[in-house]
Amino acid sequence: MQPFLCSFLRFSSFAFALSLFVLGEGLHAAPGTLKKFTGRIETCEAIIREIQDDAQLAIPAGVLRQAKALVVVNQVKGGLVLGLQYGYGVALARRADGSWSVPVFIKAGEASLGLQLGGQRIETVYVLTDADTVRKLFNGRMNIGVDARAVAGPRLYEAEKVNAAMLATPVLVYARNRGYYAGATVKTGWLDRDDPANWDYYETPYVLPELLYGDFVKAPAAVRPLVDFVTSIAR
Image (tube, rainbow, N blue to C red):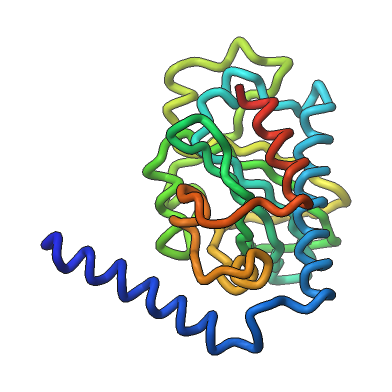
């Protein structure tokens, strides 16, 4: 693609986002909306803190040092014949200077075909180990295991399994399930950008590339505990 066309497309994308932002219901999110999104950030912070506090679940320091981004997801699955899973999450990226971005909102989901029984809350941390995989989130829905190879990551108690081959895997998956769910035979998980949520919460027309790698928004006080915790464990 020609450089001029690339620049034009980037400008057009931003202009389109700006028009949607300005033509929305208002430049400031309602208090109830801010409370909802703040609650999501706090939930995701609790998930990664609880995982790191459990020796059977914790992500080894060697993996976290390699991370180019962390995605924390909270989902609920339930169904009979067709299991449906839908939830939300946040993504944080490591910038060139080593600092971590504000958490950006994402959507997450999964569909499973096969005999299903029960319901389940699923909490997952995805460790993205290369910048190319992070950029896949810019384009919209990213199918884990399809658009980016993914394997279950080694836990702290099996840190000896952390090696160059493991760290070269684009996505390392750390999941903690709550509840019960039986019989899923085919499943695909996905992550997708949630631009409206980011526009509302950060009161900006910018989208994932600018929020993750730019310095266009000031981190609200409510996101600092999550950013500070990620910074402390990923050194």
